[in-house]
Length: 213
Image 1 (cartoon, rainbow, N blue to C red):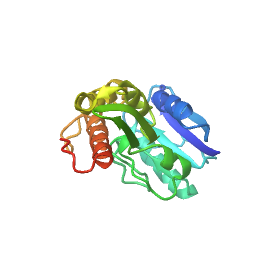
Image 2 (tube, rainbow, N blue to C red):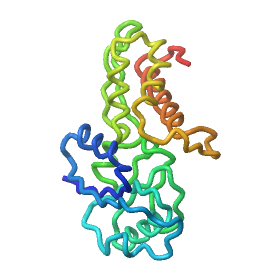
Image 3 (cartoon, helix red, strand yellow):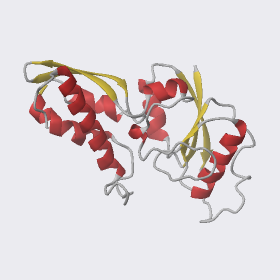
Image 4 (cartoon, one colour):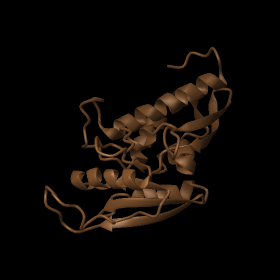
């Protein structure tokens, strides 16, 4: 089993922990490193808040304080543990920083976590113009992929193409107010776009030559 260490502030990784436990098929041991106290805006020295060493195969960074994330990335590089810090722009260390959790591409070194969570991978089962089932082999760690897939089962394809992205937004735990100027949208809307594109690709693969917009 792969050992994951989640760094969080005031329960910021709660939904991801629950999703990994529920949809990770018992492949993971999760430990948390919690920082719940009030912090100053600038931390010149983070050593009193971060551990000296980390016993884990992979680190997930859901910390809110930028200085903590920067120094955590440096620490992980030093000890050779990969760290995923979705939605962040960290230039210290070797942190992997996809814009959102469900935009994490397959990368060497992430092990079972990288195979189970990140950019969605689905198989769409259809009967005539109805989506009868969606098999999710990889999805968002918050569980939005699996939960949204359940919502569009037995739904007409045309309706599902719109509904899938909306359902993902309902289940997505990203901060909708965290507008990204680079992408021109919030992470919640980006998650919806990622999932909608994956569904369209799955339907086109299932029905080559079909016109799916």
